[in-house]
Length: 70
Image (cartoon, rainbow, N blue to C red; front, side):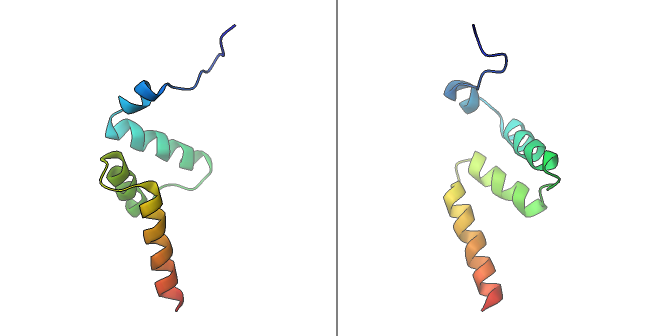
């Protein structure tokens, strides 16, 4: 018996367009009542294009937070 909602394969994920990736991320955040900011959308696009990584984006955010609190 197959799962009614199988997880996408790596190939399916890799084939997604930048807009599809952004829409999926935005939908998840909208469901949690935490809509993406313009900066969030820009970060998702950079990650989708391979310009940066999620870890790099987190490090950038943490550095900005630390800079504001010192």
